[in-house]
Length: 222
Image (cartoon, rainbow, N blue to C red; front, side, top):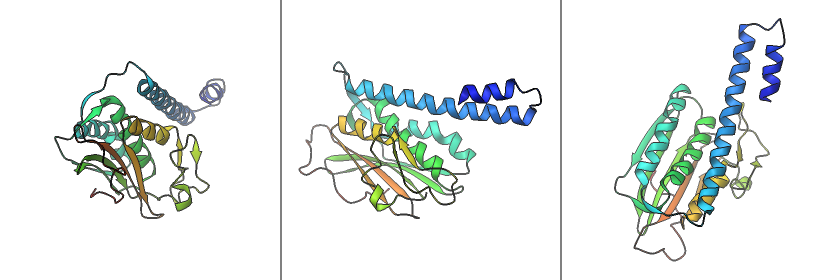
């Protein structure tokens, strides 16, 4: 696709400035997608490496870095990014991987949320479990699709109304689940069509063991 766009513009004598700009935007989008795909694959490889040494991770700091990464794009699309990040939440794991997981959730939220709506990134504690979450007011996810959104290359049967963009997971949400589960945690999704989605990443608190039966079923106060 990148080569085709470049060839079409560079070899056509009649191509004008507007066409060259459009081709440049297309190439930029394609390279951004490939960059994120490579970064996702590297994150998967890191979590699978037998020599991986986990350390103390400040959950709020990792989520905050993901917010910084996507703040310019959110502003460009007139989205309001709210941060409710409780300090002092420490998990044992990989800082970069957790930042990547939150970033993948933000990538979807920024892509799909209607202009002018809020996106909230929060972090907190519930007993022996720590959590970070991303909430948007996007199109939401069909009930029948919610169990499949974390599958690799899953694509919905229905495009989000009014967005002009497909909701598709690619590797992004599959990577999120793999990262969280490799930290002994779980991912939860709360969504209603037309009312947005909230993705919650639960992590066991160090030294407190894992709660029997896993983290709470209810949605935390994001």
